[in-house]
Length: 82
Image (cartoon, rainbow, N blue to C red; front, top):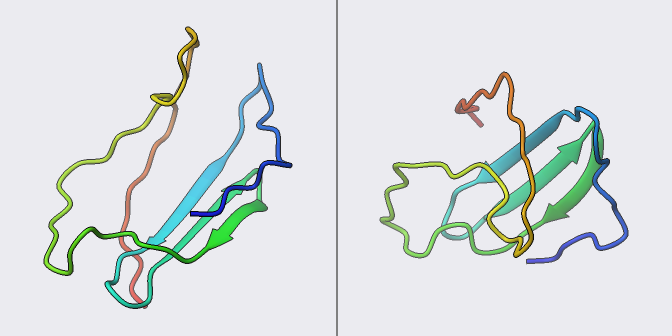
């Protein structure tokens, strides 16, 4: 999946992150906004198989080798009807 390497996530301040996943075996989409700025808008595989059931969400910083602190406040998960 394409990643925007030009965008730097602000440090030591609160940011609003919004993510939309279109989970579909043929028309997948992923969009990510930080403080209302569209940072990633791409299509790619969002489900490993067409009959996959997602039953959990992981939030945090799991791709870093170095120690860091991640604060999360007011998280919402919802379905948006198309």
